[in-house]
Length: 301
Image (cartoon, rainbow, N blue to C red):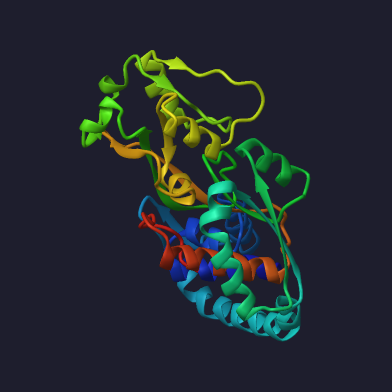
């Protein structure tokens, strides 16, 4: 008997949603669906009805659920007794995009260390999203704050981070409260090396403006400095702009609004150290309580 299947089954019933149960237990949606199907096949009965609005118990599932919950509770008690020491003494390797490293991580680290002073935290600052994917594939990091994720498995959307058009204070576009794509036509753009989301790239292509060319790496901070110096305009996320202050440029929201999504991702390894699970829950709860533009259906842990 695979106890993990029973735990997933119970969590799915409690949340009414298999996807949320999978995220809370750090399974991919595909893996969770397979586990429930495998459990149903082993028992020879159908446990859950699955629909667009979530899951519900079948008649057979209602009979099994109380016993499955008892198994899950006992397993949890055993894990607490056996794993409590591991939670307080472990190592967590965290990947972060630069804006999160600057704006969120100092407070997250300080507050987490108050609760778990003996846990070792290692932070890796990624200059672009592709590096983050490479770190996961090479087992360099256990979890990550990233954006524009394409991992799909084991990721949770946290916040919507809107893009702003920034320009020098004397730029003609400063006269507008919001910036439409039509107003950007023919402008000179300063784009950091990390690039833009697909939506922003589409805006720039439609504007048919001029891109300031650069060889090698151009940081967000360097791009902002060039905008402040009058070299052109740029389109950057709010979290990036808040990380570097407000001096020397003005910002305007796009109309219609364009945003990127900040995700929290966990390693796809089947077995995670209890400390990593603990940090995952802590980090997501911290964002829920402290960040702006939190996604309403963010999984709560």
